[in-house]
Length: 251
Ligand SMILES: C[S@@+](CC[C@H](N)C(=O)[O-])C[C@H]1O[C@@H](n2cnc3c(N)ncnc32)[C@H](O)[C@@H]1O
Figure 1: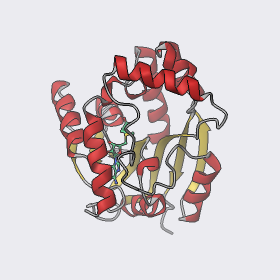
Figure 2 (figure 1 turned 30 degrees about the vertical axis):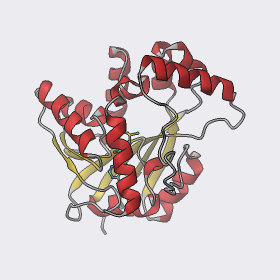
Figure 3 (figure 1 turned 180 degrees about the vertical axis):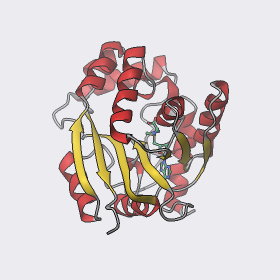
């Protein structure tokens, strides 16, 4: 593992400890969970074997396994993997979680009917290499479906952000100012802070995906924000988009 990847892995190992305390990292109501499942079902359709890349503590993997899909979850952080595995065990779900790198996967070509991920591309040093690698392990006609936030509004009140950080410090008992690279280690993450949908659509098309679409996630965001603690709600500048694409079928 190169030095950048070690920094990224160490950050997520640290972050895994309180990851599930952040309101964006779990479904806060049955309605929200059903909305996620409905969205996933509509995008993944007749897929059977699904790879969740950067599975974290299992947000997508657990839902997909519960829906009856065969799920493999990979993550760079072994501590995220340990947490996801223990949640799967508690729920009686069988999911193959193991450590791997989104930019250099240990799978054969054409191994999966679908690939999913959420909030992962921003934390990769080479998103272009990653999306090519994902195409390699997808079968022809296989679906890519992922979720990613757009950049914060540049004019967002920094006071709101600081209020939120204080609230996180007190309620989640973690240091919100510790972010990737904040310990003086420079990691170049081209999409850190979020990406505009047009950039992702162009990226996916440029590496050869077909049927590329980007859609805002209004329903889920409305359901989520209703249950968010107030400091999160007023500072919630990150809209999420759902991206879908297909690996072209062979002639
Ligand atoms: C913001 S978290 C999202 C976790 C999960 N997908 C979710 O929606 O809750 C980003 C995840 O990507 C993982 N990650 C970062 N770089 C990775 C890489 N190169 N390969 C695999 N996973 C990676 C991190 O360890 C972390 O679990």
